[in-house]
Length: 237
Image 1: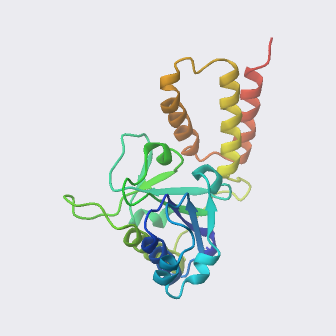
Image 2 (image 1 turned 120 degrees about the vertical axis):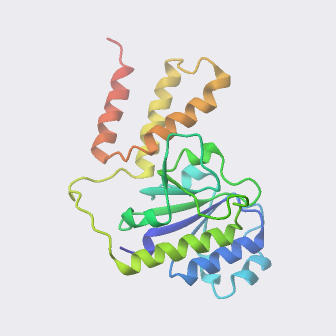
C-alpha cells in the first residue's frame, strides 16, 4: 500500500483559504496528490500559499482539470464525500469501512464545493459515497475539515498495513479511463440509434447509465467484452 496512490480531488472549490488548508492537511498525513476541478479562485494565489503554510510543494504540484471525467484517467476507485445520502443505487461506505478498500490501487477522494457540495451527476462517477458521522441536525462540515478527517483515517489504515486481499492477480480491474472510453463508445452508438428521443430526459438517463457502469467494478476483460457487444449491436444484419 502506497501513500502516492491516494489523490484528493476538490470539485469547484470556492475559497482560497480552504484550498490552502486542504493542501496543508494532505501533507500533514503524508500524501502528495491534489487535483482541482474548475477552482473558483485564481490558482495559485497569495491566500492559497499563505494558508498552505509548509505545504507549498503540494500547491506547486497540484493538477487543474476542466471537468471531473478528465481527472479520473488514473483512478481505479473513486469515493465521493457527501453530507447526505442520495436516492441513488450506489454503495455507501463508512470511515471504518475504508479498511476494506484496496489501497494498493489508485484511490481518489472527491470533495464538493463549499456552497453546494456534489451533484448527483458528479456522484454518478463514484464507486462509493462516504458520509462523515456528525450532528444529524448540522451535518455540513468545512471542506478542509472533511478532507483532514478522511486523510487521517486513510493514513492510519495504510500505516497499519492490516488489509488482506485474495483476488487473483490475473484479474485487472478496469481504470476509470477505460470505463469512460467504453461508456462514451456506448453512448455514441446509442446516439446513432436515436435512443435519446426525449431530449429532456437525456441528462438523467446519461447520469444513470454512468452510475451503473462506474459502480460495477468491471475488469479490463469485461470492458473489452462490453465494447465488442456494443459494436456488434450497431452492425447491420
